[in-house]
Image 1 (cartoon, rainbow, N blue to C red):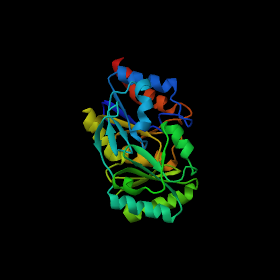
Image 2: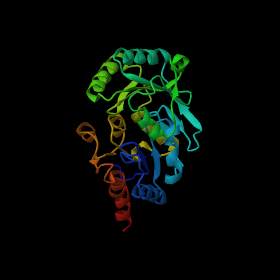
Image 3: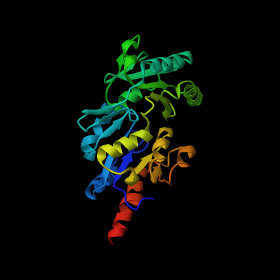
Image 4: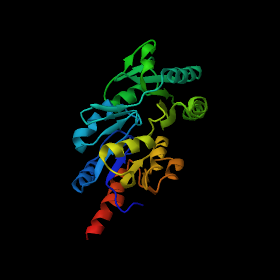
Length: 274
């Protein structure tokens, strides 16, 4: 492990917040302590940037945020710095596969969340999470020309996992394909994955990658674990995810994020100053 950690990059859902999307006081204090001790803090998420806005004020965020698994990098005021969108033909091929499987599809493009089935699975859940509603269309049309993220949504988690494998086989070289949740299959630009996102955030923050710690809970977080000597998996992560991390903290329902910050980032600094 690097003798110096200068930044922490955190996943959001399942990590920074509880299952009910609550940002606890202990988590807020942990981030405030990082700021006070000069450790930069940034977030990366499968969410659209607009769905990360609610964290800026309570966490005092000043660093760049990465949405869409690294498909869009924005300042805290949501000014776009960099973006990576799917090639139109890849977006259409991915959509065709989802449609052939009868899996509901969402498109995030042009700053909008676009859906065809307002009564489909997880629509209300997503609206609550990102705190804005979808645009309902009968056909995605030209939105497929500049897609930040295409999502397959299903309550049949095992079926979606099989679709993930098939999608990776068909278009894996032209897109990043990974489930951000058991019920969400994300398809993004091939460089819009959390591994590449960590490197871009490191560059934009001016912090050497060797001094960046990461924390997450999902399959899509494994890519960023591979980029850091200090990788932390949440206790609510699957065994597959935990096996890829250096350390494992408690769950997001048991202050896992705050506990990890306190134990692996703050305690070593305090011990070194003693």
